[in-house]
Length: 359
Image (tube, rainbow, N blue to C red):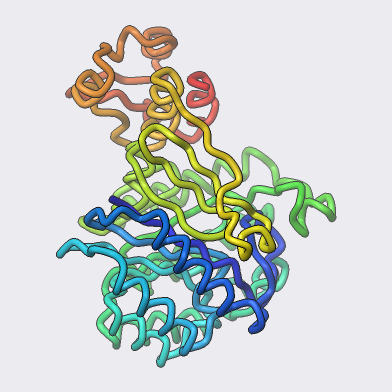
């Protein structure tokens, strides 16, 4: 089983962020952690845990004592597998040497850093609170404390300036980290950018950025394994692959989602309701048709696509009989080869236009 835990606290709000979040306030942190503990105890059934992913928000905005409390009850409740992948998200400025040591002591073995840019002016525009120099410091300290599995999040398409992207990617290669997630800027309505009517950059320039990132990282031994994700061999995110394989998982905390026994369970995003232990906002049963649709929408995000034998065993259906698979194969947008169905590399940048066919 796979576990997601949401910590909504942030010391500042980024211009583009659409996740459930609130400014760090010590009067809420322990109340939230106590409620989180009770939710986990009430819902977790004792399964062996292959992955824990603590996201946010900014989990490392908690202070040392709050983090100790979180990790102490997590480690006492969950049944860890021997090869667990244990990830925590962090902003660069919120990760001190003491916190890095604390993470290590509680078995965290993967850190996902919200870097987003290495251009100090762009960082200010995104309302990030770190600098390029801070990124170098934190990655150096993580490596010195024996963290090998480090991921960074990167946002491109903030400006019509591909040279900025080239500079950033060049520096990431110098930093020698094994996993990079690259996302084009999305402007959501209820974000600072959305409220201020920020405009998207030129589509052709954005596509050129995507292709430059893909080609450069692949030329430097990163495997492009999902639309937005690149990894050195063996460093693919096990946790995220579980999502893309449409498998089950628990989600605990504000706004978290679980997928259990074909039920999509969505937690409330209302902090007052959550602290009153009214954890769940909705539960939706997903029948076989919805499940198949989700398998396509998630599985085709992966470069290797969908295993057709696993599909047959799970649904007792041949994948070629699913509309619109045959049509997209005839159009050359999907490829069926070596028992896998995947998007043709020439169309991968436009993958959303293909995936939407399966909704």
